[in-house]
Image (tube, rainbow, N blue to C red; front, side, top):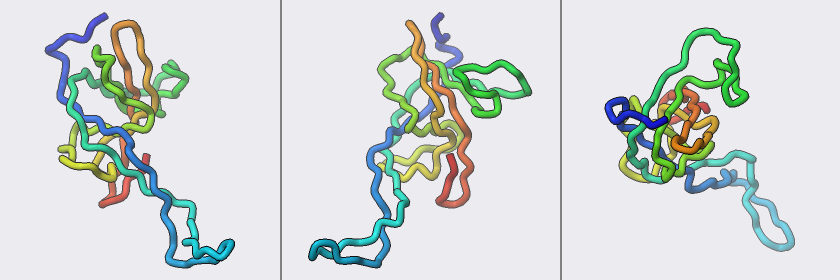
Length: 140
């Protein structure tokens, strides 16, 4: 099955580029070397969003069907594209309703995070979860 051109919409994805440990200002001396204390948090950064065309549909209703081993409440949208060259993974972010940033970013403005990606012979399907945006913070 192929995706019809008239059903495709402009969507943007960004791949995770870097994960940096957040350290506190406190230091300790380890083997004679001063080391900042790692508090266990990480800051993620994402590449510049890339445009692609795909069919996005939004799930809804209560159903007992389980697609990809996920409950219907576990995702909010599905993207289907017939382009296998798109490197979307479970760490990617999606912009559909919000304008994407034009540079490398922290992903705080992304509309969706990718929950799962499945490839078939002719299509790639990405399962999306809506991100809750609150100022500069978002939850996945």
